[in-house]
Image (cartoon, rainbow, N blue to C red; front, side):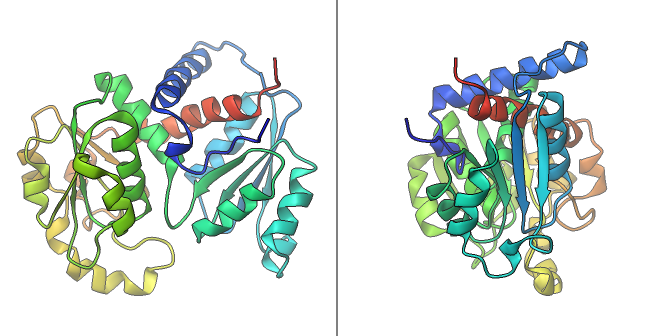
Length: 303
């Protein structure tokens, strides 16, 4: 039986993703009720971080601990990954000693190469192309607040980045309509955009994209590795800020999400972040629960 990885939402079927969300809600309830749930006792997750992180590292470490397992943090500064060892060689060695590998990196090709050479499941903790674990948390948050998202309208406002790409995948997997609003020259990858078919529409107005939306989502305008473009992007994206005027175009009960960290006053105002429509703190916490469900699915002992 081939090793199963989670590099993209599309690695799981729509039914499997919905089952994963249901499992995440269940493990969350168990934790809140103080019910011990340790199916990964004795399991070890290697966590490779080539990009810095707060939520990803804390949620995966805490998740493995709560499931009865352990997590091992690896950075390029402390291993041969940062000293020229081919990722193929690292994959063969590391996967011979652990039960799963999480990697947070730049190029998506590094994750694919790691998975191709690993004997254990590989999880995409973020790449420049995709951020699927965040989408599990986002979808869990929606399901908890509103039920199934099928048929809903989601507005993505901002950069056509890895989060935007993952929302395109989510639109396919969960059957919702996605409107993407971004400045010219900052559209999502053309192949990703095309893959979404008629579920995806591209706009160059935040107001237009938010019209009658059920969910409004944004992200920072300058992602990691783009810091030197920060000032230019502030000017380019100025009309794509999610503020009270933009949220007023959406349905009155529309939710607002942001994967965090947020640059208050840039891509979103503090007023929106702290509004009753904002579910960013629930969304952040659900990284823990959604990833616990994913870890259990991939790493649990065979029955």
